[in-house]
Amino acid sequence: MLIEALKEQITALELGRGERLVLPLGLPAIDDALQGGLDLGAMHELVGPAAVFFAQVMMRLKGGTVFWLATENLNEEYYPPGLLQYDGQPERFIMVRPQDVRDVLKVAYEVLASNTAGSVLLEVQKPITQTGMRKLQIAVQNTDTLGLVLNPNYARNIPFGYEALHSSAVTRWHVGISDWTAEKTQIDLHLIKNRRGSPCRWTVEIDHATYHLHLASVSGE
Image (cartoon, rainbow, N blue to C red; front, side, top):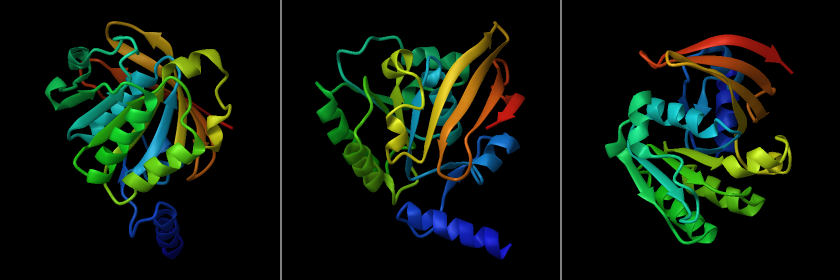
């Protein structure tokens, strides 16, 4: 018990805060790999063709207001009212469309540091630099906000595990679709970077009627 308490203290210090706050995903295998769940007051990266889908799952579990930040030149593939079919609440979403990535980062810094949002999602076209990600981590570290960086275009063109592994994000995920029907969706979760433990891979099933998550399979690395 003492060892676990020390681990929690070390983790909290790494994030620049007095205590660690986590968001359990509700699947013991994944939560154990993350030592309790996703770190709050921290930044997480998501890439892959189904990254936005997993981001919606995370934000629904977190609750609270969501700030969705993206440049104006990105397409409108992700339409907030469409979140209703995944138990989302469009009225909780605040969409911000700055002119360029530099302005996106400025707005994100202010929103993250304010501790007024449940989640802040940055939709970018290429990896944020090490310095940029570190600034975001400093902004969010004393809050209970979930910080997410979504990079769909980058993930489609460059093999995952490249370059952004060296950023300050606490976790980095590659998310793909393994099966999609009217009743359920199966997503392939690859935890590429995990500051709390080893990388791993799972297939997770999401029931469209109940929105519950079920573990379909797991493969260690």
